[in-house]
Image 1 (cartoon, rainbow, N blue to C red):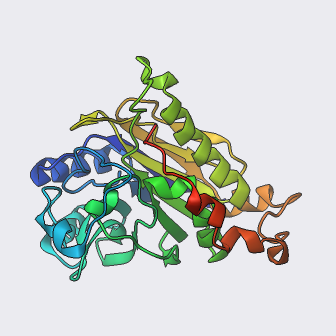
Image 2 (cartoon, rainbow, N blue to C red):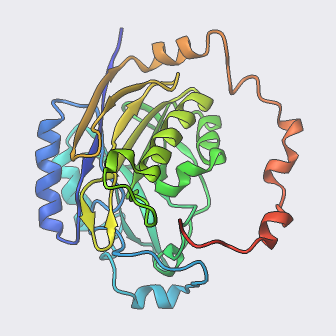
Length: 299
């Protein structure tokens, strides 16, 4: 039996990069030899302090004029510093990427040897397009812990995102987030918050329907007007939660025999093999009914 130690982090990250490096170093020690450690979305430089309205529109030029996280390059000194901390561990984290022509909300997987792969957030919640351009792919890539796919926050609300990575051979999907509690009708008990419940349901459903191991990191605490739900977790391919931080900051760690877990989940049901793409045309066709609907306020 070959096990992989997977760690999902719930921590608070803001604009202070030195504080971020110190937290990353501390958590890597706390993760006790983990093979993969997933940090939250916007780990380097923090997330947006607030979200906009459904009517907001952005351009490449206006994004650079907005106040927000510092734009960092994939080959810049900030990520090289994280590589030095990572060593042999596969580290996944999020940052504002300076992509040259535009800015992106990006997740990157790296080790001390360099960048293994990255993902630009595709699905944007209300107002995020003012600060970031959207990505367009969900490709998987090979790493020392196996073939993985990346996604960011709102991406998890779309089943096509995780399915695309799974069809590209992802055995582990790492979903990093800055997922807040509800902005309206918020619960005083964050553990009972309806957006926290959505976060958990998505994590379990995406693992189950794609029969992959799911590693979900999230911001914890508060930043600007946002109160994050934490709830970092590792989920098995049967949808079972193997480790969970709850709503507090912490590290969820699980030792997983990925090959054995995938084989067991697919012994009686094989969600990828038994697909019927010929029957799914409407899934990828333009939804003219939805496009005609008025976009509601963020609930």
